[in-house]
Each structure stands twice: as structure tokens, then as C-alpha cells.
Amino acid sequence: MNKWGLDALIILKRNYLFVTKNLNGMLKEFLLAIDFPGGAVQFIPEMRFISESPKERIPCYRVLDDNGQPILGHNFVQVSKEVAVKMYTDMVTLRSMDTIFYEAQRQGRISFYVTAIGEEAINVASAAALAMDDVVFPQYREAGVLLWRGFTLQEFANQLFSNIYDYGKGRQMPAHYGSKKHNYFTVASTIATQISHAVGAAYSLKMDKKDACAVTYFGDGGSSEGDFHAALNFAAVLEAPVIFICRNNGWAISTPISDQFRSDGVVVKGQAYGVRSIRVDGNDALAIYSAIQAARQMAITEERPILIEALTYRVGHHTTSDDSTKYRPANEIEWWRVARDPVVRFRKWIEKHGWWNDMAESELINNLRQQLLHTIQEAEGVEKPPLADSFSDVYDVAPSNLREQEQWLKEIVRKQPQEYPTNISV
Image (cartoon, rainbow, N blue to C red):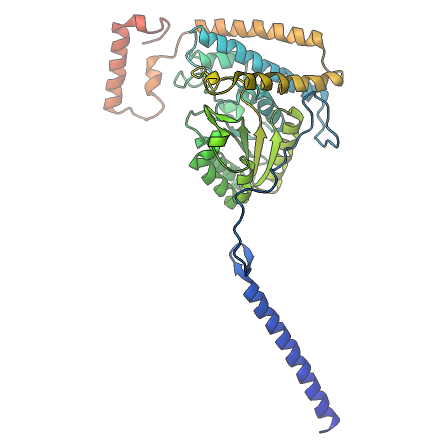
């Protein structure tokens, strides 16, 4: 064989070895993994079950300790004096509202009320981090969000007393607020239904290329509803700019979280659906503000959903229809009320900066009490919506059975006027 023939054989051998090596590599790769929708899945020879819980619990993001002092290595979004003072005054306003409106219910002047005592930081700080164009889908313990957006004390009172200035025309339970001009959808008592609505709204904002996101609030109990799971899955698949804010306050009315789920809270459920998530100290206004700002930025610019689990505690009763001392130790409630108070914690921080003092505090409290008592007197003295409003806004032309019901109700009111408010229009 001549030199050229020998060189040709050597080249063929090298090519054969190269091809064989690559074929073997591809075969080996095929045997070790499968190119499944969503990405390659590795094969392993051992039978390995995923643990039902991680070895360590998901940590909780915090900025301020219980005494209002920044923790070591803190990292948060800077807040101006103007924003910080408004955050604090709105938190105090919310608590004053809850105290006085709760007393009004106990006096029989309104039929129902729900407080946010212990959860003021989640309400106000989250609202402060959002933009007015962001659409809010609340549960029923987020009056502070509406307060931040400009809903007046008189507007709150009008709704609670169901007078003619109530935007819901007296057809909603008290504390079930709503305001179109504040991008705040009306509260519904049905648990968790608002979560999927928020995803739909977020997808609409995305399609319209709006520089805004949808935000929805719910409790730990709401995460047990099917709506929560469907909403997270839809949001992840549709890449909807929505922020899910779970107020994990430890209790779904009388059901403790130990009877609610076995997972490490709610935050871990986000990863299961492909949703970026974070756990935050819900009693730390600065941590909430920073987390919501970051979440909003990611939701809009990256077109993705974000789940935030805010750890807090419901210091008040579930509603005025509840007595939480029947299922919770009184000393537990008192400890959270005193040691973990989000309002006191934030006050200490702004006082340290010289932005607040005892004189300002006293003036605020006194003014709020006078304003709230005045709004109650005003709202109470205004006439009720006409009975006809109870039957409007559903059909373009009311069907005969609905017209019959309206006439029947008016007749009942005329026959038994002592059972109804004197300022109702028949």
C-alpha cells in the first residue's frame, strides 16, 4: 500500500472513532435523560421519593426587629420622610377606625364589622409600594389599602351605614368596600374567588401593554380553596403580572394553620406552580414595603406572577360575629398585641429619624377620634337608598317575578314600618 492509501485508512479510522464516540455519548445521554416538555428530565437507577418537607423552613425576610431597630445586614428600599410619615399616620388611622367602628357595632348602630388589628403593616405598607394604576382585588381585611389610596373616613362610614352615598347602594354587608375610582374591586365574602379574578385582570393588563399589575390579598385559609391553586397555575402558565399577597395570620376563623396544611406555610406552594415567592415579616412595614416594590417591578418588567407570604397575627376577633377567646389562649393574643405590634415598631423607627414625637402622636389621635365620631353622626343621619335599588343593576328589564318581589317587599315595609329604618324610601 502506498503512502496515500495508508493516510486514507488512518483518516477513516479517526472518523470512525469520532463518530462512534459521539454516537455512544448520545446513546448514553438518551439513556440518562429524557427530553420531556418543560426540559430534560434525568433518569436515576435508585427509587427516590421527594421528601414531604424540606430539612429547613423557608426563612423570613425582615428589616426591623421588634423594637424598631434595623437588624444586622439589613437591605431595604429607602423610604422618604413624607412616605414614612403617611404610612405611619394611615396605620394609626386604620387602628382608630377599627376601634371606633367596632364600638359602633357593639352599640347596635351597624350590623357587622371586621378589624385589621395587628395587620396594619401589610395593609398600608403594601399599598404604599404600589401605583394607583395597579388593580386591587381584596379579601375583606384590607381597608388600609383603600385608605392609602384616598378613600375618606366619610366614605367608609357611608358604606358601613348603607346610606344613599354608599357606592354599593346598601346592597353589601358592612365593611365590604369597593371603589372604581381607586381601582379597588368590591369585597366579596366568598373566600378566595378574588384570586382568580386578579389573574384575569393581570392578563388583560399584559395584553394591553399597561405599566401596571394586579394585586390580590387573601388569608391562609384561602390557600385551601381550589381557586387559589387554579389561579397560581393560570398565572404561571400565562405569565400574568399579578402579585399574590397571603396574610398568614395563623387562623382561618377558628381553624389554626396546623389543621390547615402540612406544608411549610404558603410560600412553598408557589414553587410547585412555577411562581417566584418570598416569605416576609408581615409586622415589619419596611420589609413589606421593600418586598412589594421588588415584586411589582418583577411582575411588570418580567411579566411574571409573584407570591408573597406575610407572617402576622390576627390580634382582633375574626369579625364582630366571632369570639376568638373561645379557641385561642388569651395570653397568646396579648403577647402578639404587645410584643409584636407593627404600629409601635414602625413608630420607633420614624421617631429615631426625628420624623415623629409624642406631641404629633397626641394631636393625631385626638383629631382622628373627633373626625370619626363626626363621620358616624353624618352617615347615620343620612337617608337609606330607596328599596328599588335592591332590585336594579342586574337586568336591563326586570322580569315579572322580580317586580312582584319588589312590590311585596314595599308592602311589608308599609305594613310594619316599626321594623325598618324611618329614613328608608319606599
